[in-house]
Length: 182
Image (tube, rainbow, N blue to C red; front, side):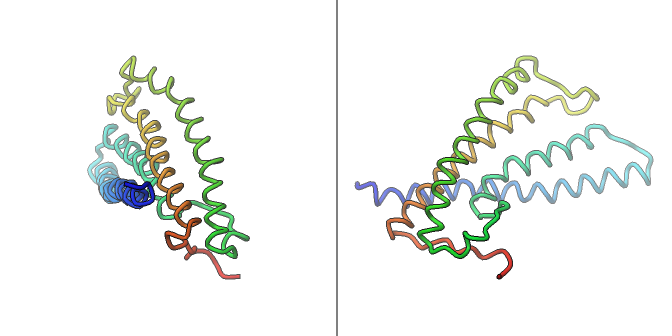
């Protein structure tokens, strides 16, 4: 099978994977809000404080941020200063996105992944716990750094495939649909 036929299938699978993770994490936002509401009610109405519940909100917030980063990249939701970008042709935007992925995203993902590996490994070695008698799995929380890097790498591969297909004229361009009109 020629690679040209496999590229869209791989792209669809990678994007689909990112989409599933992103949609799952989106539900976590609702759970996080409900838990935070319960914390406020328990503390100010009933007079009960729970360290575990408070830490669970921090854990969920970290999960939303770290596991949702690839989904945000997939949907072009990251902050971008696109004064010139939005005026470019589809091919021009594809070149910017391709070069940005290859020379910015991948190096940063590798740098953070390699740099945080020892940090995460040390946390696992001692099965790090919360200092406040809260959730015992701090090492699991720190592992999300590596998971985030893996998800961003996967979505970066999808981005590269998409931009190459656009440059070859085999996929529609990505017209930015956000930002103010000048």
